[in-house]
Image 1 (cartoon, each protein chain N blue to C red):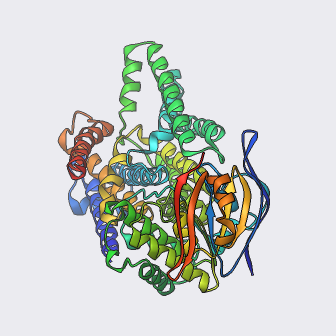
Image 2: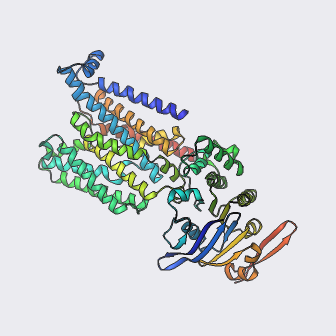
Image 3: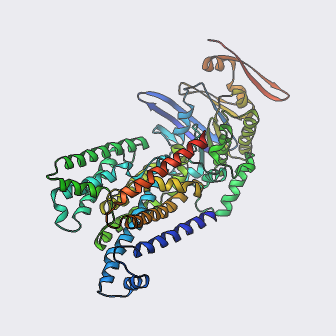
Amino acid sequence: MRYRLLLAGLSALVALLFAVSLLVGPAALGLTESLSALFRGQGEAVVLVMREIRLPRAILALMVGGVLGLSGAAMQGFLRNPLAEPGLVGVSSSAALGAVIALQTGIAASFTLALPLSALAGAALSVVLIVALAGPRGGALALILAGIAISALAGAGVALVLNLSPNPFAAAEIVFWMMGSLADRSMTHVALAVPFMLAGAALLLMLGRGLDALTLGEDAAESLGVRLGRLRMVVILGTALSVGAAVAVAGTVGFVGLVVPHILRPLVGARPSRLLPAAALGGAAMLLAADIAVRVIAPDRDLKLGVLTALVGAPFFLHLIWRMRRLEA
Amino acid sequence: MSLLSLSHLTVRRGCCPVVDDVTLTVSGGEFVGLIGPNGAGKTTLLRAAMGLLPHDGQSSLAALPARLRARAAAFLPQSREIAWPVSVEALVELGRVPHPGAGAEADRQAVDRALARMGLQGYRGRIATALSGGEQARVLIARTLAQETPLLLADEPVAGLDPESQIRAMQVFAALAAEGRAVVASIHDLGLAARHCTRLVMLARGRLVADGAPAVVLTPDNLAEVFGVRAYFAQTPDGPVFQPLGVIR
């Protein structure tokens, strides 16, 4: 009952923030004007602003936040560790490397989807690597270590690209991209990323029972009929599909996947299966709010989304750790 | 009716066998105590029997598909892991994972029965990770009971419990056996094993060295050979009493 209320409340919050996200922007549009443009108008400037600028931005904030929260909850449940986050398997940093290479080589400027496609290719490559290293028969530890190694390698690759960048402008472009943003994304980006994110989310949402059983440890979960090898593959693939696509269109947005499951865990009785949908909604709400905030706080400075989530997320996380420490003492 | 049959079960760690050619059949109505010194292979035998370890030879359970096996046998691992601060009720409910089609009402009744058997009715809403080690152990036993399987394999289920809880848990296992189900539990406390088990299986260095009623297995020769102890063992009006007295090597 309390759980249903929580999901209903979070859904309402997401719907509200989605609407607000559609109404906030540099073009000062009235409420009725913008809504009627979204649903009815044709061709005018207002319609373009709503359908081609604000709507894709709101959809991407909803989806990217959702999959970050969801995959964070799945990863924490799978590794039975509240400090796990979706980037742990190395997908985010590999996708970033793909994007950075596209920026560096100039492919990114050749056609609209060059950058996200290159990022997706990076994510796919990291999945092949991680499955080879920690596939169906590897343990959780193998997965973590392989993820760390791949992240380090991709990080080194990004550093190398920055190192070799021909001029400061190219380097600045790369650095700004990596801070994560949803500004100036089009419906083409939505069309590219959303199918991957939906597929990944569908995989992750299937994991509830298995993750619940893992509360008792790997042996007990297996004796309850959970096939651990399959579970591990679904976690890796679901995270890679959804987070890879999220990074491809939004850059790296940190802390959502780490903090959101952490905040919501006490509210769902700590059950991993219940945390999955709640964290998806919570992540969507958090990213929609953050994306509204970057537009409201500094409308003309192009504050980056990833900077804001880390600025707000990290102190909040410290506060949680502080509280946890006091409870345990 | 046979609920578990192991035939020539062998588990190797590197080249040396940890469980060596064990053949064993467990039928309904039996409460089997698996005894043996540290490192004798009790845990490995239980895990291999459940199909959790690669092995040679056959185990009737390991041969089943995962879903059916989870309805044929429940397993209580030695490491008492509770990863998240869930309620006792939610934890015991995990025993219902292998019964997805049972329905909410049947699940609730199974959880109620399991909590009642372990005397945990008052603990429902408590947070499992905030309980003491012994209380957590009882909650985890209740989880295996909620699974309502014909067979229960438990790895040191009563280690670390207070005397009352130990005796109660042993009585629960004996009652399951009396209902026609079967329990195989590794136990270090030979006194408890001698009093409550219907049958003891003694392991030494991975091999099965004795198998039968407690009085047949706990002979001075076996105790000296396998455990290196001598003991007092007598049938009294209060039932069998077993007490190790001293080491002999």
